Length: 121
Image (cartoon, rainbow, N blue to C red):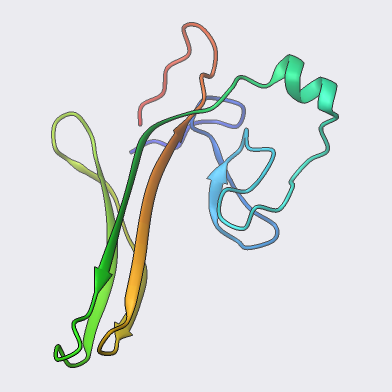
């Protein structure tokens, strides 16, 4: 997999706050939600394309009172149109005691990059 050059759609950088890999075009880190560059309200409305969320899935797991302790691992996998794995990340791990509950949410935000721009990802 080739990394896109800086300024190209799909180019990435490291968030200076949380060290996660994020899109170079991001004004706010999606992981830690810190602002990465100043944008006035007028600039944000005029120049930034609106993000859409075409996928959002939320689910809850509840450990029954007599279920004992259960461990969990949340794994995220991204595949391309051919079914080839592009990325696989362990997002979090933990344990649930009887009667405890966890809520998991997955959302994908997409922002247009402009006409005719394509990336290999």
